[in-house]
Amino acid sequence: MKVTFRAEIMPGKSRDERTFRIREVLQNGRVTLYEFPDEHREGEFEPLNFKRNLAR
Image (tube, rainbow, N blue to C red; front, side):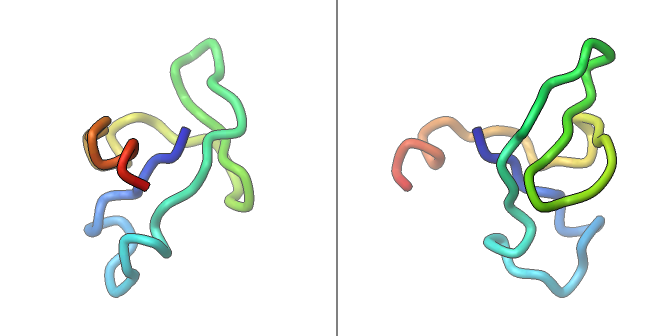
Protein backbone atom coordinates (compact mmCIF):
# COMPACT_ATOMS: atom_id res chain seq x y z
CA MET A 1 0.00 0.00 0.00
CA LYS A 2 1.22 3.50 -0.76
CA VAL A 3 0.94 6.58 1.45
CA THR A 4 1.67 10.22 0.65
CA PHE A 5 3.20 12.65 3.13
CA ARG A 6 1.21 15.87 3.57
CA ALA A 7 2.60 18.76 1.55
CA GLU A 8 3.32 20.78 4.73
CA ILE A 9 5.74 18.11 5.88
CA MET A 10 7.67 18.00 2.60
CA PRO A 11 7.28 21.47 1.04
CA GLY A 12 8.47 21.88 -2.52
CA LYS A 13 8.19 18.17 -3.34
CA SER A 14 5.77 16.75 -5.90
CA ARG A 15 3.15 14.19 -4.94
CA ASP A 16 5.28 11.43 -6.48
CA GLU A 17 8.31 12.52 -4.44
CA ARG A 18 6.20 12.39 -1.25
CA THR A 19 4.70 8.95 -1.94
CA PHE A 20 6.19 5.80 -0.37
CA ARG A 21 5.23 2.16 0.10
CA ILE A 22 4.50 0.83 3.58
CA ARG A 23 6.99 -1.80 4.70
CA GLU A 24 5.41 -2.70 8.04
CA VAL A 25 2.53 -1.64 10.29
CA LEU A 26 3.72 -1.68 13.90
CA GLN A 27 1.63 -2.63 16.95
CA ASN A 28 1.59 1.02 18.09
CA GLY A 29 -0.13 2.04 14.82
CA ARG A 30 2.93 3.62 13.28
CA VAL A 31 4.41 2.46 9.99
CA THR A 32 7.85 1.96 8.52
CA LEU A 33 8.39 2.74 4.84
CA TYR A 34 10.56 1.38 2.06
CA GLU A 35 13.38 3.79 1.14
CA PHE A 36 12.56 6.27 3.94
CA PRO A 37 13.92 6.19 7.51
CA ASP A 38 12.19 5.99 10.90
CA GLU A 39 8.63 5.29 12.06
CA HIS A 40 5.73 7.50 11.02
CA ARG A 41 2.23 8.11 12.36
CA GLU A 42 -1.03 8.39 10.46
CA GLY A 43 -1.26 12.19 10.89
CA GLU A 44 1.84 12.74 8.73
CA PHE A 45 0.06 11.42 5.64
CA GLU A 46 -2.71 12.65 3.39
CA PRO A 47 -6.03 10.87 3.94
CA LEU A 48 -6.27 7.72 1.82
CA ASN A 49 -8.32 7.97 -1.34
CA PHE A 50 -8.88 4.37 -2.38
CA LYS A 51 -10.26 5.32 -5.80
CA ARG A 52 -7.09 7.29 -6.63
CA ASN A 53 -4.90 4.40 -5.47
CA LEU A 54 -6.81 1.97 -7.72
CA ALA A 55 -6.42 4.21 -10.76
CA ARG A 56 -2.61 3.94 -10.69
